[in-house]
Amino acid sequence: MRIRIILVGKVREKYLREGIAEYLKRLRPYAHVELVELLDESVPETFSEKQLALARQVEAERILRTLRENEYVVALDIRGSQMSSEDLSKWVQERALAGDSNLAFVICGTTGLAPEILS
Image (tube, rainbow, N blue to C red; front, side, top):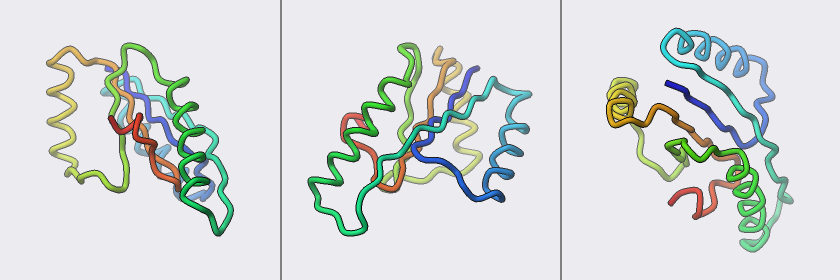
């Protein structure tokens, strides 16, 4: 199984980077795991809906260029539903049994994900 975690934005806090590195290390015996950090689009402190939509669109284009044709894409967005670790593990196993051995988890940045990524 190959898992790519595509993150919009850079993790700047040292403790978070260390935590991510630890979890990636724990996952590697079970799957080939790769973390891909994409540049997030900056928006002004006070922004219009149009500026927000434009930022999402630019980020969506970066995400789409990064995704591979054979990947099963999972969009992780603040508006999505949560899953326990056990449920996630079962879901990943189900995907593997269904023949989806390449997963891409896309984690949104501060602007959220554009509709074309969520669909």
